[in-house]
Image (cartoon, rainbow, N blue to C red; front, side, top):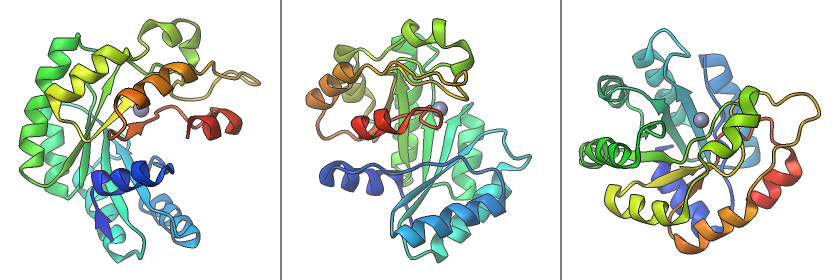
Length: 220
Ligand SMILES: [Zn+2]
């Protein structure tokens, strides 16, 4: 069944479990992820990142049709959504959630742009994920790791002012493949503080693919 990320994550947050959000690129990998979720009887977030497929509308339609036919709850999220026009295109295609990534902007600009989209999407029943701090690239880990970890104080103000449904936090993970044998340095204490301060807000972890299982279990 097709649902929003908010529906899936509010329940996961309440019941204290994590939900996988694999990146989808084609119809075939989408089918494989859904099959796996059904086998595990687990909810699923299909994450499509803008630009991974030549036709956002088409891939959105494929994902939402397959999600509707599934017997587990599935959200279709427009990951790292770019300009407003692309976000609107995703909503037209049926995505039930959008990530408005303005994490590279200064704090006030991030808030302003995200809030504008939240006001629009909430009126359409679409949920919003945003990012505070900045999750960088694994290939540039030495510099990206410490440049923009999420501040607890800023997170509180950010959530209050934007009214986002879930928040991606920077706690030491990074996108893409880490160098071989490399283990990212996760700031568990920071995560704990954010969670303690915002207990009702589901948190999102980007850059988990290459992160070791032990760290992922601890994070969850
Ligand atoms: Zn990401």
